[in-house]
Amino acid sequence: MSYFYLGIAIVAEIIATSLLKTSEGFTRLIPTIILGIGYLVAFYCLSMALRDIPTGIAYAIWSG
Image (tube, rainbow, N blue to C red; front, top):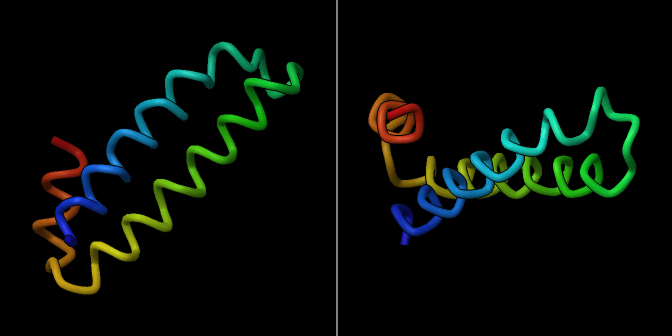
């Protein structure tokens, strides 16, 4: 289950990061809201994954 959470964290961060340019400096409301939710989901799921997966391994998979 931890690797499932890590996968969700990776996907959520990719979506949020791709919306950074679309938000145009946080001036467009909808992309900014989705961006914020994406990062919240990413960090929450990463924290859930870190309960069982060592930090170094989780970070290597996430950044890879």
